Image (cartoon, rainbow, N blue to C red):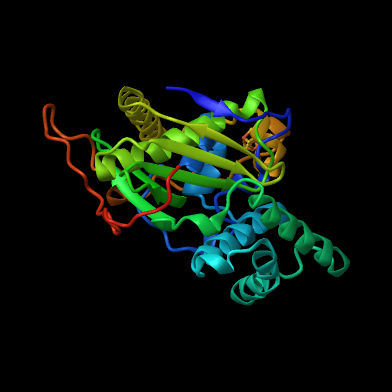
Amino acid sequence: MGMTVTMAQPVGTDPAEASEAFGEAARPRRPLALSPSRASDFKSCPLLYRLRAVDRLPEPPSPAAVRGTLVHTVLEEMFGRPGPERTPRRTAEAVGPAWERMAEQCPELVGMLPDEAMAGWLDSARDLVRSYFRLEDPRRFEPQACEYAVEIDTVDGVPLRGFIDRLDLAPTGELRIVDYKTGRSPGPDFEGRALYQLKFYALMIYRLRGVVPAQLKLIYLADGLSLQYAPSESELIGFSHAVGALWRAVTAALESGNFPARRGPMCRWCTHQALCPEYGGTPPPYPGAPSPGALSPGPPAAGAPMTVVGADPIGPGVTAGTF
Ligand code: SF4
């Protein structure tokens, strides 16, 4: 099935996607699983994957990544209000209070920019929020879920984990997955990365609900463009095998400790260059693979029935507008 980009511009990837979360190192360790970001890290540069997922080295909060979190929060809160209150003005006004709550919860974010730059940074977040309204009218539909956390194993036993920004259910039963990007729409060099993330989410929903999502939609707020993709079942099955192969490569690297550095586009946003052999640095000693329980239980026996490991916290039945 096809992928439609309404317009593409030769610009870089979304910096907010360069790191999954600025507070990752502070969180308790959970069993390793593949998320779209960590899978992309490993594919781009195995050392980057190691430093983030295994060593869990702290990364300084980047204003772009924090702004991405802020905008996602504001859009999620917007859908918590009644439809008539989801106006551009009301939503843009919510940026300031949302930032105050974020700064209170994560004091380390305060000071990421000089005081004189904060007003412009908040204005840029409001611009991104207003840009959303050029692409959708949120007064006309009710999402089934926002910030939808999914954990599920593939049929090969690969643990997948991810947050879906928004899940819509049409009255006809079709599912749409929506992901917001605070960067610009991808140029040809980065289209594959966007497509990979979409397929990842589609596979999780397919495993969780047994339904192929009718549409996946990426909304690029920086230039007010969107990208739609309609996957097929055979595509998702093929993608599941590819994810299985990737997970086997990850687990082999975890056991051997061999995570080579691979210079590429991600270096531009990498905060670990001082530890990277490609830039004259030396990585810290390998801490070893996380405990066996933190790894995949392994693939089921051949011929085993397809088993959904995760539980769907929502289930069917909530309607949304058509798409
Ligand atoms: S600087 Fe580049 S090559 Fe080195 S770890 Fe980071 S992404 Fe990998």
